[in-house]
Amino acid sequence: MREPPPRDPLLAAPEFTAAEIEAGRKLFAAEWRFVAAAGSLGVLPVLEGVEVAFAGRSNVGKSSLVNALTGRRALARISRTPGRTQELIFFSSGQSLRLVDLPGYGYAAAPKHKIAAWTGLIQAYIAGRANLARVYILVDARHRLKNADAPLLDMLDEAAVSYQLVLTKIDQLDKAELAPATAALQRAIERRPAAFPGIVATSTRTGAGIPELRAAIARVKAERDHGGSQRRRGG
Ligand SMILES: Nc1nc2c(ncn2[C@@H]2O[C@H](COP(=O)(O)OP(=O)(O)OP(=O)(O)O)[C@@H](O)[C@H]2O)c(=O)[nH]1
Ligand SMILES: [Mg+2]
Image (cartoon, helix red, strand yellow):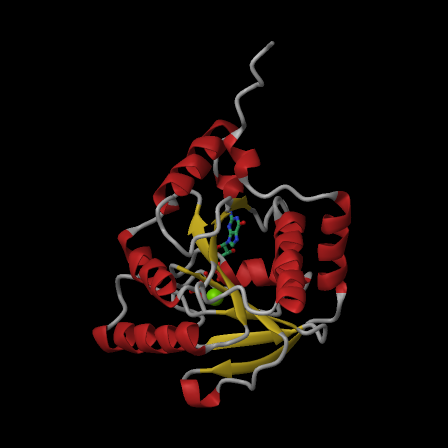
């Protein structure tokens, strides 16, 4: 018997059926709108439907990804200047799904009090948000995971909130660089308890990975809708 061919590390990412890709397309085809911007916990919008959040270092492409997913060019504000998004920004499709664009972290010029405020706000949001089904942590394909990402990963592991890594800006990589970049990310989260395996590789420039990420989110939402809380392990 012949050995099966070695698995392409990219295929370690979740694979989707045509029906799942279509479910993702439909879920995101709705009219997206801005719901709220929250700079403190006191002003978070009331819980409604399922939430998925986008986190990552400043400038990694969070707002661009929200726009690509929703098919809206300027729903979330994009900037070349790091630190553009300083609040939690909530978007709704009216289909009991909300996307949350989280403020970026890790830019050198940030004053200490801002970092402390960011950490407190995000930690409280993550630990206390009952309808938060998944956090997507974006990683720039050229920069990989950095020390600045570790506190967020720790926070999510601690709070047992499911998260998955998303490679962004893969248009900036040579084709041959993509598989090693994905494999390195996969290894980096191997032992982390709340990390969902599989890396979604995306580019908002080429549209790569956008249908797959929509399908992934549709799957998360369906699991939440049917299975109740997957979030707290052992509880
Ligand atoms: N080449 C390339 N550039 C991208 C891509 N996505 C976003 N960018 C650029 O990356 C920069 C930052 O994008 P944003 O979406 O504002 O990043 P952000 O993570 O929301 O940044 P903060 O809100 O400051 O944390 C912008 O100049 C975007 O045009 C991509 O897929 N490919
Ligand atoms: Mg932003």
